[in-house]
Length: 302
Image (cartoon, rainbow, N blue to C red; front, side, top):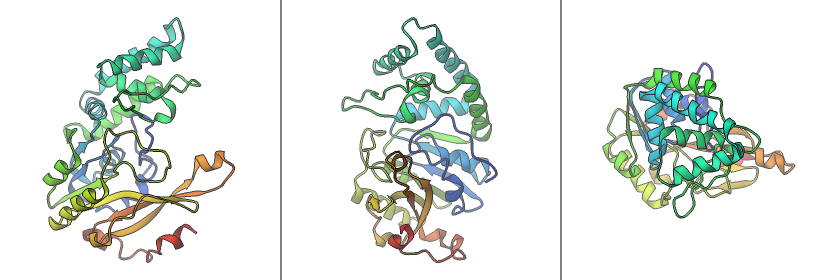
């Protein structure tokens, strides 16, 4: 990949930085990329940047994220204009930009799920981290040190993403199993499900979790249909392991990706490297047969 792919906004858990490593295990060309747990669709954007697929399917249980992506891709100028107006409001807000954030958050929690509001909350909240309370309300706090992503930067990235993907994407906000049911031979499915990965903080980006055995069975059905897939799942940070490995019966090849030094460990005075696991379906094995033999998981992180 030549250069990092554009992104609409910072989003915690995004695979944008790891995309170049993930992309090397994808076919050079295939018909359709499907992301059942898209988040901000970093892998879709990276794949489109290299023109690897003809079509794309973006799904996430968080319908507001999907609406934001759809607006950015299909009607970019509308999103840019609406976000710019909302972002600029904070500078005329009599009680300050922090109160403006809470006012916008209240609007969202009262039912106004406009794409520009979702974008503003992501652009202003701490670490770009979507967090929901048990009542379903957005409850993340603002980053008080900054005013959020400047509309000029948003505009550049949104226009690039729209150029890459406009009229090439189907969108939905339904359960991942329904998405996998419609996957067919010739598709490539990339999955980054919640409640796994390399953090000890519960993942509240989603309204519901993904049960391990249920997920493994859904992947098994992909195997039965000869649909190729790549899954980001468990991992490690220092000597600590996170998440369960996928069952061996799925016949996946497991690759460990170096995600760099853990920022949280660095803050605590430790230098710990984060590794994220990538599982490749059996059909993708020809792409890795010339790579160095994968070491045992524990050997890799020592």
